[in-house]
Length: 397
Image (tube, rainbow, N blue to C red):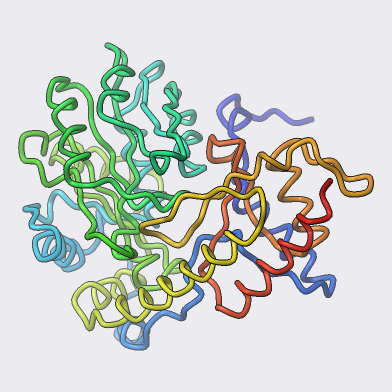
């Protein structure tokens, strides 16, 4: 007989991981599945970063690390913030964790009490709302419109703030939409936050280096709310290091200390070898970022071109990250044989089973009219996948 806690019973499984697994299961049966579901670069970790990890192994860097991460890594992260973002953080304000997801969980669990409200613009990354639930907080979902690239305004955020609001979650460039907030838009939000000293902004900037037009802007640049901002980032996307599991946060000292205390009880600290690799990623040759960006930009343009050739599909043009988030609801109510499409979940299952393409339903991101497509794969696979999608969708009547 199962006796699970209400806490774990309330959580939803990751839809991204579920669709990725469904695609892998079909592939294991010999089906030629094209995986457009998973959010990771298809590049290998650069050689100079792997060499640093090998050196760490050979130098027996295999004992327990400090809970917030090695001092030299926290120094490298502080230097990165100054060099790339013109932000001043001391190494003591940095906490290194097992991926940006771990960093986000630490912050939310240290900030949010039972009944506290967290404003979450939608579409949102699948994990945000679940982590707020884990902290027994209340998700206040603000739904962005495709006409505004799914972004929410400062006025909408201000209207949603109540005496119970504890945090606002931002993600720019966005997963799943690829939308980016401009400096002007962020300053307007910052001015709202300034009026509410109890409210904190948690900004997820993991896709910072994957931008196609404008430079990434951070809400952390506005000194008048610096003590209300937590920046979460990591090495996973920019350096093709998803499996190394190194994320980090920069926060007011009191919050960094709290996250270190929590982390010390939960994970001790991130893997020593991966930390050494992350130091090289941040301090070493940065040309790999630009090399990957060239490929991502080309793939984005290819994906958008091919999507526009499919009738009934509406999408905004992503400015960053490696996703498109097309609106597919024009096909709801249509059928092919005994398959009827009523939801984005139905649509994704249809694409998986009929076209052998793995995508992610929009319901998981708070937007039931859309699906998420990752273009972090080769040009050939993108072309093949979009062709399969166009053919499968044409069967829906």
